[in-house]
Image (cartoon, rainbow, N blue to C red; front, side, top):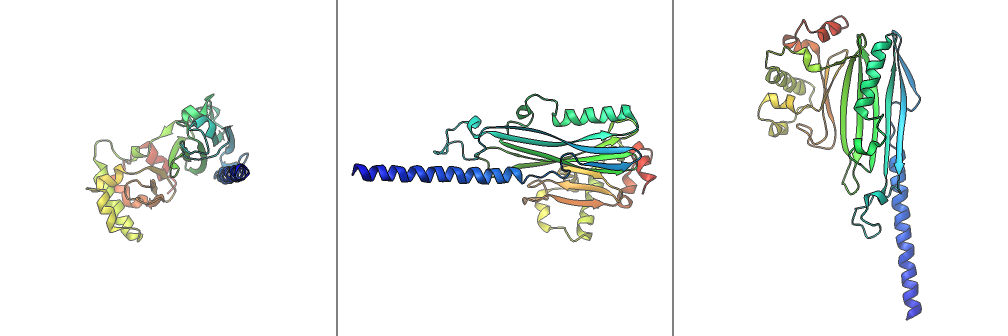
Length: 276
């Protein structure tokens, strides 16, 4: 009987070791398949002396085994689970060195790349990945940051996106809503235009009416927007507003459609109007 108990304990031991190894391998593959839009060290030139180089900051600690905190296979200790943070961020270079310094300073502040402890900045997620993409429009550099934070024990990661627009003449950030005069209520009018565009592009879903009471709510649910050469790109993040599923919804509204709402004296529009 003692021999049988010993064999059973030995068998359970090997099963536990096997499960831990399997989870560790899966976690490792997940971590290493999080590829940014720009690869580390890549440099892209946008003309007029504007270049963007992808840099990377990485922090790692622990064994990266993502199990429930109360799992019998691991102590309920977040530090034991470990964390992995990978941030690919842009380093901007341009002829205007003052603007270059201001842009890079704002990027560093936004992503927390100068922090000694990135976990504090990223809410202590077990796995945090950040990448970016860029586009040059007129004298504006649009940098779209995309990220995902996974908390140990969560069913899925939390995705986010933020586009920052920089004036290459001054380095200052530009707010897309500056396109619209501050004295008008543009949200209802813009929301109505968006609904019509959704229908024209055959991506309108009648179920969306359950997610807003008025057209203005479609604007309030916007997760991110980006200035493009052909129009204003609008994003809805997963599970937000008219994007109830796990995918991001994106649509481009041509400037011709929103021109009646635009402040023609806006510096942002003056920069765009020369290019479209």
